[in-house]
Image (cartoon, rainbow, N blue to C red; front, side):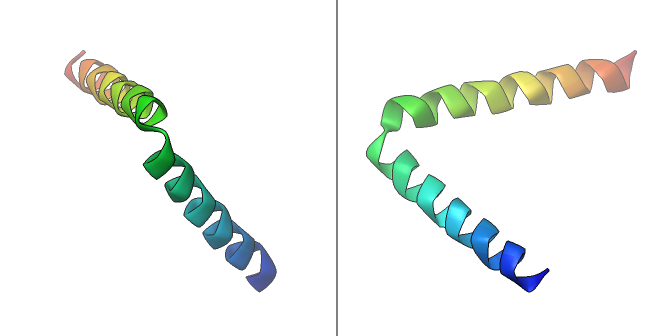
Length: 46
C-alpha cells in the first residue's frame, strides 16, 4: 500500500514538471477545471 502512495507522489511531481514546461496544457487544464466548477454549481442549483 505504501509503495502505491510513493508512486502516486512521483506521478504528481512529474505532472507538475510537465505543467511548468507546457503553459498551453496548463491553460487547457484550468479551462477544464472552470467548466467542472460551473457544471457542479448548475447541479447544486437545480
